[in-house]
Every structure is written in C-alpha cells, then in structure tokens.
Amino acid sequence: MKHKISGLHHITAIAGNAQKNFDFYTKVLGLRLVKKTVNFDDPGTYHFYYGNEEGAAGTILTFFPWENIGQGQAGNGQATEIGYAVPEGSLEFWTERFKQHNVNFGEAAERFGEHYLPFTDPDGLNISLIVPKVADIRKPWETAEVKQDAATKGFHSVTLSLDKIDDTARILTDIFGYSLQSQEGNRYRFAVDTVDNANIVDLLEQPGTSRGRNAAGTNHHVAFRVPNEEVQMAFREEIQSKNLNITPKIDRDYFYSLYFREPGGVLFEIATDNPGFTVDEPLNELGTHLKLPKQHEQLRNQLEEFLPKIK
Image (cartoon, rainbow, N blue to C red):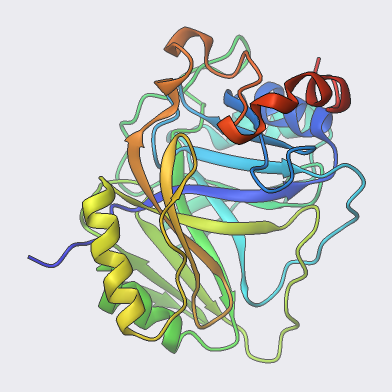
C-alpha cells in the first residue's frame, strides 16, 4: 500500500528577538513552550518549540530568534500564512484580546465556508485563527487567561505562495497523498484524509509576485508528518526517483528529518513522530530547561552565558 503523509508536523519561522517572541506566543497566544534548545547549525541562537501540552505533531510552531536579523519579506516560494484552529464562538474573545495587547489584526472574514481572523506576530509573521467547519476535538493547552473555550487547538492549515501551483500540487497529490478539495479564485485547497486536523495545505497562485526573502517575520520551512523512520525512508526513495535533491536522514533529537526544496521554492521537511519531546524532559517540565544537542553539550557554559536570558 502506498504511504500518505499524516498532515503537518511542525512549521519553523524566524524571529528577531527571543524575549518578545517568548512573551507573545506564551502570554498573548497562550501556547506552551515545550522545548528550549539551540539551532543545530548555529548554537548561539535559540530554537523555541511552542505547542500543546505534550508538543503533539500538528501543534508545533518553532522559531529561530536571530537577534537583530532585520525584517524579512513574505512572497512567492514561501509559506506565507499559518492557520490555527480555534473553537466556534472564540473570534470575539481573540479580537478583544488583540486590542488589549496591541496586536495588529485584520477584519474577520470567510474562506471556504470557514470564519477566520488574520493577525501578525511582533515580527510581522502572518497567522490566522480559523473556526473549522468540523469542530476540532484536540485538547488545547490552557493558561490563566486563555481557557479551553478559546485556546488554539493546533494547526488548521498552511498557505504556500507560488508563481505557478502545478509542480507543487503534483508533489502534494502524487507523492504525499493529498487531493484537491476546493478552489476560491487563485487559492487552491488540498487536504489529506489520514488525519482529521492539521491536514490542509492551501496553494496561492500569484504569478509575477516577488520572491520572499527569509528574515524576521517569515517562515523558514514546513514539516510534514510521518509515523516512523520506515515510512520516512520510503518517501525519501520516491522523492529521489523524481530527481529532487533530498538530504539523508538527520537526527533532530525529538524527531528524524529529511529536507528538500519543492519545485516552487518552498523548503519541505518530512519529520517522524518518534521519539517526541519527553525523550529528555518529563511532561510536567517540558520547556523549563535549556536542552542542548549532544554535539553542543560541551559548549553549555559558554552558551548559557551568551544566549539572551529569557524571563
């Protein structure tokens, strides 16, 4: 039987200031910091993972907060919007909360029969809160101010902006197992039936729009979910057979990763469910310690001195 992707695993973006990023996602949006580690390739930079209680696949938004990196530009060849699922009736709560915290947000609107509220984070990253047609039953992380009746459930969708969608669509349908569900203007909605949530990718076709430039406020890559390494390596063989360059398997401590750039320019990752975020911290302590990849553990003293102190 041909394998299918199990929806979104995580999305990784770039921020310009670690403290502002932490404050916004944990205090304003009410997500849990499930892992505080460093960039494998640049250990002088944090890598933050935000999600639900256990950091389940499909809930994880991660950031490289490169201090003073400057402002990026969203455009073609990038993921340009992250969609979070929220409960029915919660958009009023979020509108008031965004006003209270001086968050830039737009008018609530409707797309594919679903109401959504667009906003940007402190770096200008485009996010929308979306009320799905079918209620999302995932258990959210609650805080003192953001309760279950309003809290984000995890990803609803991701939007990729492209000059032409055809080649990217073929990756989604022929390799990943997605199918075209609907179209509104130049927006094409694809979904996979292996999971009930975090299973939507919208392709936005906008020929002639300038290419995106990666820096603060832009997405770095989109990671798709597979249950284990056996399925992951089957995908690797198939992607290689299409003459696309794909990396060897890389151990990211909390999952195993493959990376390739799809024909439209977006960096894709295929990431495993195993071993998960409790491999080096108990569930009740997730995100409370600085966890370092094995190859950087000898730098701990220097890194703890150098990395910004997060209050």
